[in-house]
Amino acid sequence: PAEKDIQDLARQRNEELKKLSLLINGAKTDADVDPEMAKIRDLNHQIESREQKLDSDLKGILSPRQRAKLLVFEHEFNQRIRREVAQRQLARNGDARALRQLLRQERVRNRLLRKLGQSKSSENK
Image (cartoon, rainbow, N blue to C red):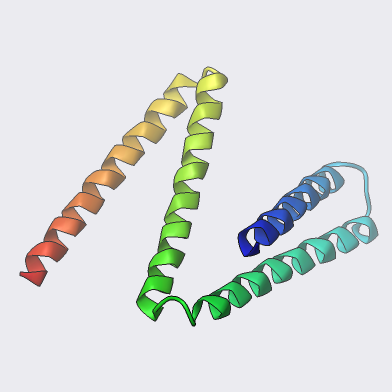
């Protein structure tokens, strides 16, 4: 339920961000933009509060290390999903150069992560 709540709030926030983008690119005044920014700030606060409540709820179930692993996993998973979506959009739009650059960056990042993992495992021995 917490994840669903957070997703719904994030979806609402993203819709409001689209509206804000249209407002700032249109012929609207600062008075029109301010309430929209307040809505977005409120949604961001609600998301953060729900995430904190979820973490508190998990304290009785998971150890601090397990909660930390969950937090890191969710962050990395969301980053991977964003990259994948961006890559697919670029491929669909036929921007092969940008797609190759993204793939190159991903390979470099993976090599660095492997090296970091290898150096940490050798430190632990």
